[in-house]
Length: 420
Image 1 (cartoon, rainbow, N blue to C red):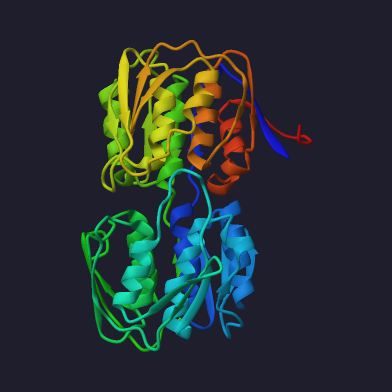
Image 2 (image 1 turned 135 degrees about the horizontal axis):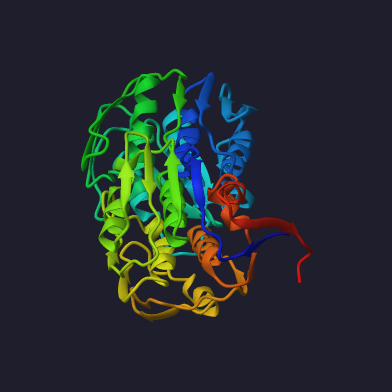
């Protein structure tokens, strides 16, 4: 099993490119189920979650081929409408095959999803929306079985903003009879990216990126070619890596507008940050002040950057309060940070972080994707060596992150060691 060994105390410097967005390519891959033929995506990150999605598409009858970071997916005749437990348990984004399968075949059988243990993230909102569109839903032996012939447009009002729910309904609605309106829709950049590809295929989606999305169903879609947007969470993680090590790091091939709240918080903390259309640069700073953050749906502070920002605050001047409003169990990284010397206390959905911590390398364990990034960042500034276990969590969402840090000067290497 792979582990990472990091010798801390090295300042990171240089330029680093961002890969394509994990949270964009996954719904894009499932959208290929909507149209027969060859779909082509560029700037695709090679991630464990992408491998899981492709394996599921294969099980459904699709095929695929790689050429560098370009990916071709062929979805001619689907041979199954069942997403098996063995695949779905590894990645909860697998639920996103339900909308396209319902729209194209009229039925779908999907195992209840798995993925990171950061909270319950119920899919009730997805299922209620499908029911409003005329689907019948049955929960049987751990599988959700949905049928609808045909799906019909409806007015969907989400009680809580849901990224996955918005994506699933968008994909279902593009082939539904009539018009669909999604109110309280998620506004994330990945929603916009999905809508752009659906429209390239011939769909009629209007309003992506706002709170109200309108979709007029069409009879048929055709495959297209699409470039995946840069990963804003990776861009933010790389930026924080430069900041926490007191380095000069320029993050390339990104979209600074997608991480405006992070950039604002870095500046509030005392960092100089410059940005252009597709790059952002953090300058060296040996002392920064603690600032508070509260996670929120886009365009608020991303929950996917909360753990990384907490790592930065462990060595800030003063005390910060980090409030998590999206997931109820997203402080699983705290005990591991405390093992390294961080001074953090929890109170419900708030973490109080005392700065000026003297961090020491230690054996630590990844618990989820973003927690793993926080451990890597903390290890970069800890005294001595840190051995990080379960780095497969890192590989779910970061393409070659150890190599990128190594190229910036980090003393980091990957080890393949037997389980203890």
